[in-house]
Amino acid sequence: MNVLPRLSHIISSIPFKFPPKWFKDIKSFFTQFFWNNKKPRIGYNKLIIPRSMGGLGVPDIFQYYLSFNAKYPLSWAYNNDFPIGSWQWLEQSVMPENGNITLASMWYCPKPPSLLNNIIIQFSCSIVKQLHRRLGIEGLSLPSCPIWGNPILSAGGRTLRNNIWQRAGIMSVGQIYKDHTLPFQQLKNQYGLLHSSFLTYGQLAAVISKKCKDGATPASCPEVDQRLKQASLSSGVVSSIYGLLSKTAPSAYSPVQLAWAHDLNISLSASEWKSVWNSALYSSKCVRLRIIQFKILNRAYITPVTQAKMDKKHQALCWHECGKRGTLLHLLWECPAVKTLWLDVISFLIGLHKVILLDRRNRSGGYMMTVSVVSPTMKAIGKWSSK
Ligand SMILES: [Zn+2]
Image 1 (cartoon, helix red, strand yellow):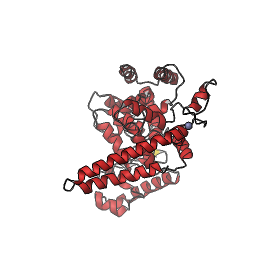
Image 2 (cartoon, rainbow, N blue to C red):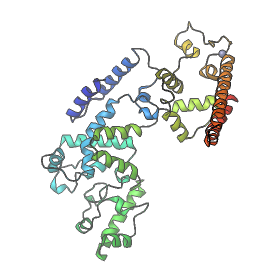
Image 3 (cartoon, protein in one colour):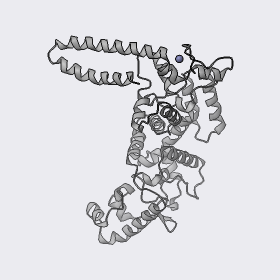
Image 4 (cartoon, rainbow, N blue to C red):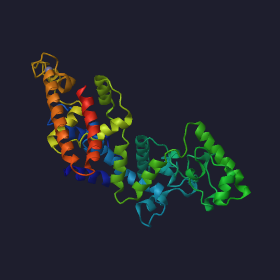
């Protein structure tokens, strides 16, 4: 697929907003290509889910656009040392000196200072907003959120500044807040603060507690913070951000899961569903079987009922001529012809396991091992046959 690098090249070269229609058109070209100009049977939002999570890992151009453009704002936050002449160094140098807002803080509070009229920084901030929304975070929930020069934590309309605390090494929210603002005595002992710092402590505690009352949860997302930091330091920043975005994307599976739960009268926990989707593409070495499994799981398999819906000249009756409606459930388990097939499969498997048991019995120590491996399998088969 050499289309992706060509599109990525355009996205990475132009640091400006792309019109939404452009992404819409690309998506529609992709869909037309996949389904050969026919009506799509599996939504694009499911196909872009990573393969390890049950999707097909089809590239999402809009997500690439976010990842390419998030590269620089992400480095504002996590890489403080910008080499002279680098892009970030240039951005740092255009920040208004008397604005009391640091470049780093704009990753957490993506609102450029009013004195700054820079179209590229403004664009980066708009990307940060979208990224935060997708990752379900807000600036203060990241423990690395800076305390000083950050518009999130302002008092009387001004950002906070304190040289003594900064020299003591207290820079981020995660250092002073863990489920609640840490007691002054603890900070004093840990960072060697003086008694006179208590006033600043009082001010900080008041600002944070006001934020909490407004619904913020300071330093509550340490894992995302850590992953973002790792992404910013890795050599493949864009791929790391892309991976992070695709793994935290809202589940496109909910309607399918609900339909399965209704039809089979089961309720699976989130982790059980996760393992179902995880194994969706690894059930067999055979690509054809994997495609069948993928279609069945996504309920995109063409059954007589769907065929009849697509074209009125088809009948919605079972292919085995049992006279019942050919729904997916009927074709998989309920049809008498299929039930006979399953009984044959089960007796074949049971026969196979007995052979293994007898074979292994002769070897020392192997027997118990075989029994322990086979019994859960047998149990699973028993459960399956009673269905
Ligand atoms: Zn039937």
